[in-house]
Image 1 (cartoon, rainbow, N blue to C red):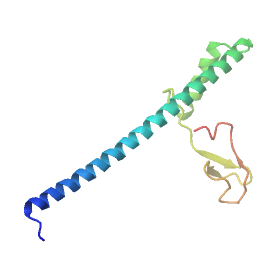
Image 2: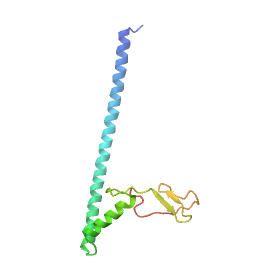
Image 3: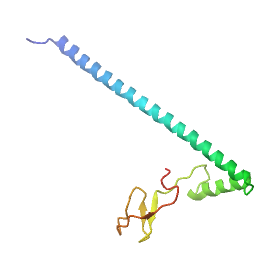
Amino acid sequence: MSIGLGGVYWFAAAEAASEASSSAKSASRHARNASSKIKELEDRLEGLTLTCMAMWELIRDSGQFNEEDLMEKITEIDLRDGTLDGKLKTKRVSQCHKCGRKMSLRHTKCMYCGSTNLAQKPFDKVR
C-alpha cells in the first residue's frame, strides 16, 4: 500500500499540529506554575511587611527611636552595597571561624580546613 503525496502532507500537518498542541499545554502548565509562585511570593512579602511594621511600631513606641532614626538607619544599610537605590545586594559569603577564609553560604563546611562551624550573621540565609 502506498501513500500518495496528499497523504504525506496530511500526515506531516497532523504531526505538526500534535506537537503544537503539546507545546501549548506545556506552556500553559509553566504559566500556571509561575502564577502560583508569584502569588506565594506576594503573600510572603505581605507577611514580612506586616512583621516589619509591627516591629518598628514596638521600637518607636518604646521611646528610644523616632522616624528620623529609622530613616537614617535605612539609608546607612542601603549604602552598604555602594548604591542608594532602596535595595541591598549582599554578597553571599561567610567566614570560617577557624581559618578565617571566606566561603560561599551554600557550603556547610570549610573547603580549606574542614571546619563545620562557619560564622554566619543572622540575615545570611534570608535571600
